[in-house]
Length: 392
Image 1 (cartoon, one colour):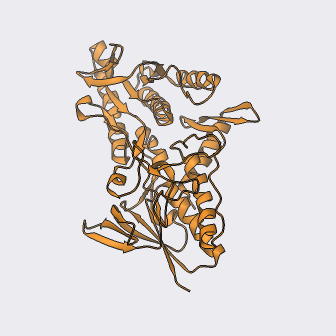
Image 2: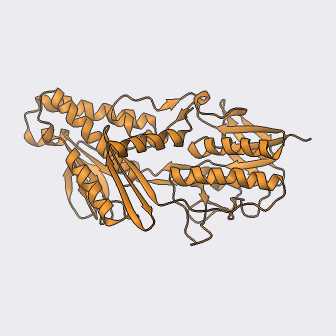
Image 3: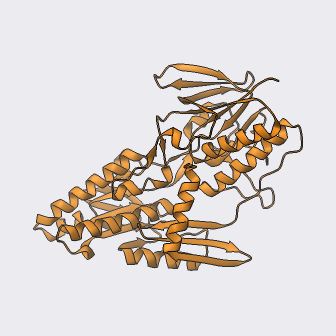
């Protein structure tokens, strides 16, 4: 029996779950297989935890052996392009040399990248581990300067930080940062209440895709931690110690952290795949890439539509993990030449971390909004992090 070579491009949380589910599908189908992951990173970074090293030294980079399922080969390389007719991909290896690899099945899970502001806008974009560490170094240095600063206006600036972008990443970053900065200010002999963290939100309230009471409760929790939320304003640029907002307000802030959300990985535009205008891969209800044989795509890089309501899935862990599970079932059905299952949307819910001790969870079930806060919310959020990263 011919061995099936399945290549998965992209080892984020969705890629890891896809590898696990595909391996199980191959075994259920009784097929000999070779499962290969291609990813450019020498180690696995828990991207959902990028906000934690902003506040404190925290290990969020893991050895691949800690997260990869059994029987997975890993090649350190970056996808270059795909020749779907020949069933071949091209990638640059760790030494920047172009290589090729033939496949029988190909799964595109290159995910997304963080939107970054133009360099002229200033500030620091929270897009990778080095940025997290740069932010932590900067605010700690500012607090140390503030101890001996005699000018009240400059001291106020040094004790202030703005977070531009109020999605889950911005909320979690601002909460963790406010808690850490206040703790450090107290350690240095300053009044923790002098620390100011501003969260800039372009919408009229937080969590627009949830109920109003969720937004209100979340904002109250942030206020208690020392975060001030400014609604219906966008951050434009940082200059001369001021963050200029779209309504003309100029915030005195030590620096700005940009958390502007996600966009599909730009490598997709060079892979000769059908894409939407925003750059996502077009797939059918069973995650097969439109017009391409033996290629599937899920996660942030795929335009996955719910057949029941016509709405696109979001770019979050919960959607990607459920897509990976369903993809395993699809591949098993395709290998057995049976009708494949189709996509089903996941239940509406959010998990948000609020510093080191609290969290907030919202779920919609049977038409009722369920909200859990405090330590139980934090416990559930930590569980979702572990689940997302497939940590053994």
